[in-house]
Length: 213
Ligand SMILES: C[S@@+](CC[C@H](N)C(=O)[O-])C[C@H]1O[C@@H](n2cnc3c(N)ncnc32)[C@H](O)[C@@H]1O
Image (cartoon, rainbow, N blue to C red; front, side):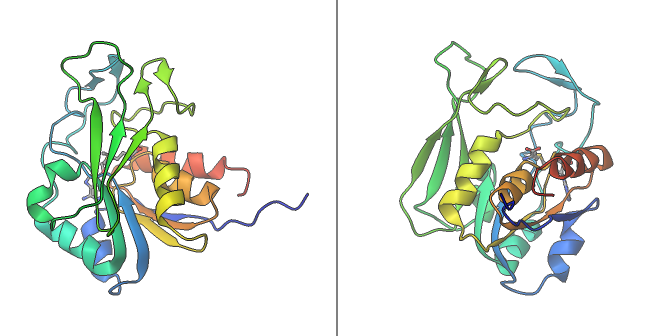
């Protein structure tokens, strides 16, 4: 059987602002991204939900400035921005928010039952169900040493629902590459930028492990 053709994602390990500013207006179909929320989840070196250990890091001590959001909106036709509730003051009103409902119906008073993405689409709001805590995970990929790795199933659903098969997708806050893996596995082209070398290398390894590479 001939393998399905897919296009290699490209990436760079650097601050994404310079990359954003260098892009032509509306040259990307979709920015699908998950910027730092400014909650300092990476600072302790532990992830609270299951106490896994990570290298302590400062990338989540503050939110990206308004400039990053203006640039993401300038260079792309559409945007899906996870953690949109942390950046609502930088974004225009939208009727199409996505809720990723991650509640496994176990008590966890200190954790959010859902995460919210702001989108630029003129569509209804959606809820996507995907349990994601310790061993209770509907999305079965490996866990990598990043405290805010997103479920692959959530990113795949975004790609499938919001892009055409030939779309060019970019994630300027790539982390371990979940967006790029979802996009590439679905035959879309993807560009990723990540400032942390360790996370960038994980993303590159995940991509190179895809059967279509
Ligand atoms: C919330 S995490 C993304 C996690 C990702 N969705 C995943 O599944 O692995 C945000 C990422 O943005 C990176 N980052 C923070 N500021 C950045 C910047 N200015 N340019 C590029 N990457 C940045 C951080 O190192 C972090 O890995």
